[in-house]
Length: 462
Image 1 (spheres, helix red, strand yellow):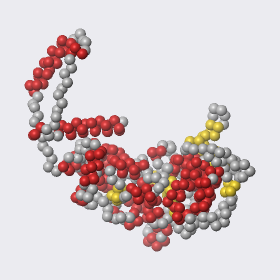
Image 2 (cartoon, helix red, strand yellow):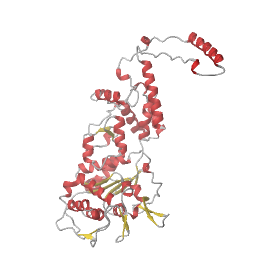
Image 3 (cartoon, helix red, strand yellow):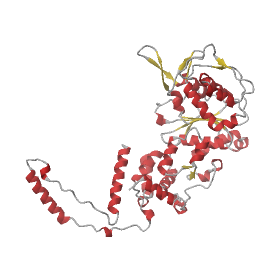
Image 4 (tube, one colour):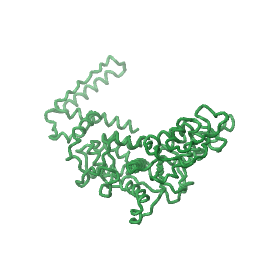
């Protein structure tokens, strides 16, 4: 429905633009001959049409195209014909600081260059990012909401929100005791970000990972937790009575290695028990071998490489990695899981019971999910709910999660929405001549603070 409305609005804009152009060419009306059709009332209809055309010709007044007013400033013509011309206009204006004005004349963009230096003065302002740098620090993948915002706004910038600063400062106080003692706020080592759809939870989590990695932390970041419970092969391991998913386990190890390889080479393994083996991805069991030993002196990098190189050991290495990371004390370790709610419902897999019946397998029965899902420990961990994955409504008191772990992450406030709409005006998603306080507030209330809906409604301001 949205795509249909968008195409209709675009067609209307093109028509309006063409009619407003000076010296525009108006195509002649095509005459339809009555001989092309057969009808008993052709004569009557022809006489009626003739009379109607006469009445119209008397009342119609010819339009002189040279009398159509033309805006003196080209920036006032914010009706963009297509995305290419809009991108061209934005590229010409990129260095025009006179356009970077937010609500009440405040600067639209913050001058702070790093996430670590952001403070309360930077809230309700946009922070520019380099996409290549973002992909380098978040090689596991950027959140869908972030990439969509960049594509539609034609600029890689994100709003600095107080909710994110509170989240960042919470973990900063954990590793910095002086900051903890100077603040009266309670410190949480385990947090579940909850809130309505499109409130920015995934973006806040990704920015937290960005900040932590800038600070030198070791972060295991899972941008799509639902992938741990869907797709690939699955086998039941008789040794653990859990279900192994070697394809997903191998991907988890590869993603964790992308940014952390240099640090993992410096961290020695502290557990040398044999790693249990399972079925490989589509190759079955190894004959006569049920475990694999890690040699002394191995690093966490060696451990991960073992799981990547040997498909039978992939799941066992992921489970062992979770145990090893809890023993790391030299640097802070953070577990950041997006779509965390996918781990509290049923997976895509099923256990055959009869030829016509299968028992759905819960996510907690998967070995990899079971190893990482629990928050009943002393490690730093953040899980973000993603209601767009449609896993169903979960109860408030989740198993293996502290009762006070849930933190509500709200949608845009009125002040944040003001900055967002001024930013969309700056990026030509909103027509300048149609912009007003009354109309951007209408967008805010219609979308109920939903960021994606506000962005979708912005071009329809009239």
